[in-house]
Amino acid sequence: QTGSANSIVPIIKRFQQDENLSLGVLAESPASEVFSKESINFNIVQEQPSPQDLISVIEQSSFDLVLVGTSSGHPQHPEVLEKNMIKASKIFGIPSIAVADIWARFRPVFGDEEQQDQGFSALPTKVAVMNEASRQQMLAEGFLDSIIVVTGNPYFDDIIQLKQNWQSSDT
Image 1 (cartoon, rainbow, N blue to C red):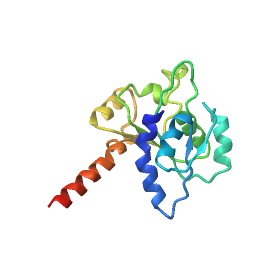
Image 2 (cartoon, rainbow, N blue to C red):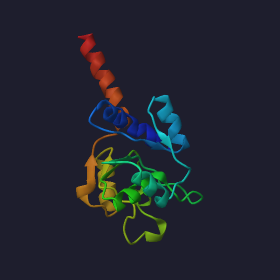
Image 3 (cartoon, rainbow, N blue to C red):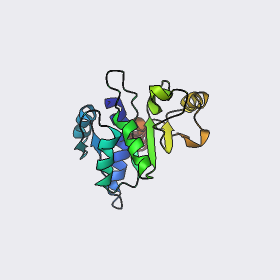
């Protein structure tokens, strides 16, 4: 999903500036367009990779953290990269952060339809949400408060920086 990719671009760019981090970025085709435009190096993965496909990717890498956007997919395409990356990272005990750039029900994003009443099959270590309303929505859907962090949408970080630069140059 391009919206999801747009939301994590500012985070990826910050990680790229840290010389102590080794960064690997995976993308399906919609996100690859966003990452290409932003000059972010990435590896393209097959459309709708299964958790098993991503297990082999993780085995060949040395991830310390998994950062994903959020997509719930749809009935014709039940495999979602973000969900499956979270599932695969759990097998290796790698912490994960999902940036929730949506105003929607969160249960379909982090669970599977067949597990509607049993929990969340793709629950990351932390979920970064845009605002308090999103946090309240997650709590109402049964998510633990301890995994929810209100961060705002990273997509707008550059706008805030531009405003600050503009105000400081104006004075």
